Image 1: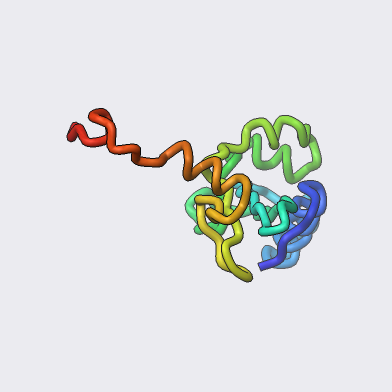
Image 2 (image 1 turned 90 degrees about the horizontal axis):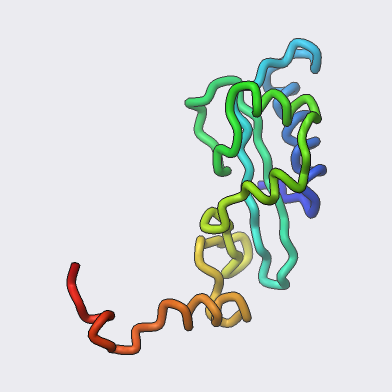
Length: 132
């Protein structure tokens, strides 16, 4: 798994990998899906991994963020990085717990993890004990 410190680097690498895997030129490339994954490392650094797919049904390590014309636009470089970051669903972010071990919840020994734990803490109130 190759992670990149900037979104632009991740997209460039994904574009190159797609062209190599599909054996097509950039002008002939037809993209159906763009997947992206955001990683928060233990030191707080944010890394990205991106993938392009020729078919929407292809499995991906990332979250399918765009399909069809929108995916092709990202491939062609016609996108706003601010929009991609804004559209990123926070619940899809993966947090590093150990070396190359990631989970959707931040580790409890980090500031983000402590905040998340406090938010979900069971304080044994009536509301916490009620079955829906």
